[in-house]
Image 1: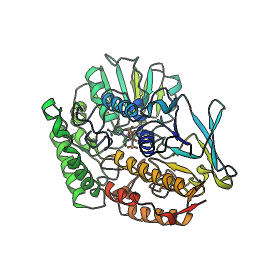
Image 2 (image 1 turned 60 degrees about the vertical axis):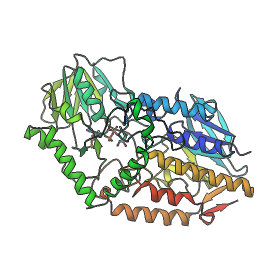
Image 3 (image 1 turned 90 degrees about the vertical axis):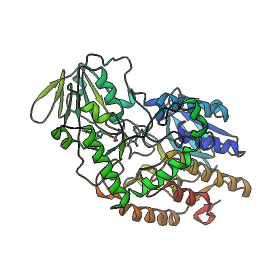
Image 4 (image 1 turned 30 degrees about the vertical axis):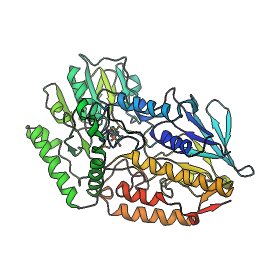
Length: 474
Ligand code: NAP
C-alpha cells in the first residue's frame, strides 16, 4: 500500500488525512513539529484571537458543528473543534509530535521520498503532502536595539502568557488582522498603549453575535448564506467593481461613526484602492483607539532602546512591553524544508521568483509531492477550509488513479502548469491586488503568489475533475 506522509496537522493536514482515510487510503502518517495539532489555531492564542470568517462556513463541510458559542468563534473553540475532528475521523493516532521536517529528497530508483528530520533521522514515503500553511512562520522586523530591550517583547503568534498587561505601558507594532483583535484587549488592561501603524486598513463591521441554544438548529442554514456572501465579496476584489465601491463606502461610514476626532480619523483612512490588501472586520478596534490612554502613531519604530522605542524624529516613548503584530513570512512557501525533486531540482530555486503550482497543488519536477494551501490558493473573501477540502479531494483522486492503474509516480507536466499559471496571473492582473503592495506579493518579483483570483466555486469546479493529460504517469 502507498505510504503517505503529511507535514503539518492544522486544518490543511487534517483535511487531507480525513479525505484519504475516508476513501481507503489507510497508510497515512502526519508529522507535526509542535507538541499539539491545530496549526495557526494552536499558535495564535493572543487575547481576542478568533476567526473573522463566520464559523458555519469556517468549518469542515463533513463535520458541521451547531454548538459554536457565537457566529465568529474564538480561537479556543476552533482549536477544540480540530481536536474533535481529528479524534472522530481516526487522525489523532496517526500524528507524530515533535517531528520537524527539514529535508525531502525524491529517490528516483525507488520512486519515493526520503524525508529528513531535525533530529537527523529519516523516513521514506511514496507520497509526500505539504500542509505547512502560508502563515506559520512569524516575522519580527529587524529593529536596531531590540536584543537589548529590558522589557517584554514577543510576536502575537507566540503570545507570552506569563506577562500580564495590567498597568503596563505597551507598544504595538503592526495593525493587521491579528493586531486589530488583540489591541482592544490590551487597551482594557494596560496603563497606556501606543499603536504603530504603517498602513491604514479598510475595516468593515462584523455581524457577530452569540448563538443561543434555541438557535443551534438554524446554524447550518447560515452556511449557504455566508458561502454566497463570500462569493459576492470575492467579486468585490475585482478592480473597480460595484461591490468594491460598496465595501469602501461601508468601511468609511464605519470609521466615521466610530471615530469622531478628525485627526485620528484621517490617520485611519486608507489611501489606496479598497481590497488590494486584506479587508478587516472589527467592531471594537476603532473604539479602542479613541480611549484617552491610547495613541495611534504613524511614524515607524526605527530603534528600540533598553527602555523604550524611538521614532525617526528622535522621540522616545518609554514602554514596558513591545508586541509585534507584524505578520508572517508568507512568501516563503515550505520555509525551512529543503525539497529536492527529480534530477536534483531544488524547489526553493524553482520558486525563487515566487511559488507557483498547477491548481496550487502540483509542481513540475516534483513527483508524488502535493501541496495543500499552496501558491495562489489563499482568499480575500470566504473560507479557506472550502479550498482545503477541494485540494484534499483532488489529491485523493490522483492517489485513486495511481492505485487503480498501478502507477508508481505522477508528476504534473510543465505545459499544464504553465497554462494554469498564465491564466491565474492574467486574472490577478485585473484584480484589486495588482494595485498595491501587500504580503500577497513576492518581495522581489512582485508576483502575486498567495491569492486565488476569484471565488471558491470556480476553484472547486477546476479541482473537481482530474485531467489525466495534465500529468505524466509512470
Ligand atoms: P499582517 O496582516 O501581515 O499585518 C502585519 C502588520 O504589521 C501590518 O500592519 C504591517 O504593516 C505591519 N508591519 C510589518 N512589518 C512592519 C515593519 N517592519 N514596521 C512596521 N510595521 C510593520 O499580519 P497579521 O495581522 O498577523 O495577519 C496575517 C494574516 O493572517 C491575515 O492577513 C489573515 O490572512 C490571517 N489572520 C486571519 C485572522 C482571522 O480572523 N481569520 C486573524 C488574524 C490573522 P503594512 O500593512 O504596512 O505592511
